[in-house]
Length: 578
Image 1: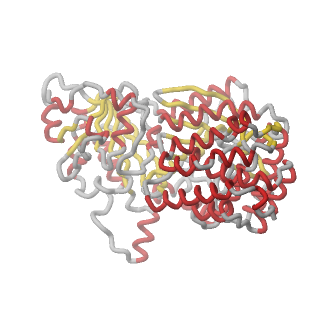
Image 2 (image 1 turned 45 degrees about the horizontal axis):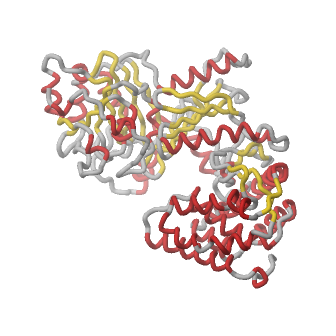
């Protein structure tokens, strides 16, 4: 047998905690639609170079499949993850399949939701491969195809506008299903995909799309109508087809549903005997997905499962769990945070299950924005008042509350270290005579993380506590809320930070909210320059992901230097807070 399809595993890829996508922003959270990959040998036609990397972390052995100019092998340059994976040509593989002792594969994965390669050469290469499935796959083997949809809403829109098509039209889902049936599929599961920036952003469940964000937007209501139970498989931009040669083969999503069902039965809930159904399936960067599930036709027993398989996302979930438990002991907000139900691992995946709060979220400039922002401020003041511990900002106080933010900023972005280093002495000097309330800091307090009741705008819950700190600094959460609202209204994030944080150019509504918070927490104007600087340090070290853009990084360095100049001025020289 050729070394190309050796059964040897690839430990450096399968065991690493590093998770990098080299040529795409594809998030592989859709892979939870597949059967558990641990211990499997897989074939993969890797279109963009990222899918193979994600698969290799999960399965026992992965072989890349190439067909020359039709399906070229991934980039083989040194340092690329795919360079460590075996590659075999289709012709070579089919010839090897005839030999005695050929070790068949457990699955075949072809993920091309944009139609970049899968459709360009027509049916011939794919048909040839699928017709050989009996020889290539185990008796219970399976095939996954992620394909572009020629009947998608986007393509209908292009036809109506007379936009000329480029390349060959995508293969029809019905034709792909026919090929899969001919390849021996006992069951074909169809998963409509909604796309965002070239990647799968959401898997539409069987019951259809349900708007859980920006529900007041006309576009969301239109999506509910177009991508309903009947429309989604026909009009979605892309589709994932999972063909099972054994219909009893469970997917990872099936395993999750069984676990959720068992949890409800153990809790003796009224809906405990009903099998849960998936109601929402969101895909994020990294190997992360958020799945909402519960009994059909009711929402009071729904849960949210956060699935992660990369180190960064899993670490965030592990950090969040103790914060949620601590928040349930804070009387004023205990009913306004999700309750942690379960934590478990399966097939290289970490899963955190929480109660699902009925309501919606917001990240667009829609009419509820102002009311939801005020409700968020009410929550923040209650949380910070109840958890406030007066802390002298002497050397121990500074090292406890402020120094970790400066250290995180310089470690995450070393090229800013020189600018931040100039802050040390003046920042300590400015704060050392002050006493600040150390509070339970959310760390990502934007309106998008607020669940509210449509119509009344009543705050129902605050979510996403993975960046929380206790003790944390006051005011930083409010600054983030106000800055992010500027981004929602169309400002780029650099301008959204620079104008209020560096220049102190607050709008009237921002000023009103700022004054309300300062009065409630007993903060004076003398603390503001230092807290503004620490807000930017927190963002550089904990929140924002900075690309290798010299101009952008130069602008951030400029803001850091300007804040350093401000906190270095004598206290009496600064204008009082207006």
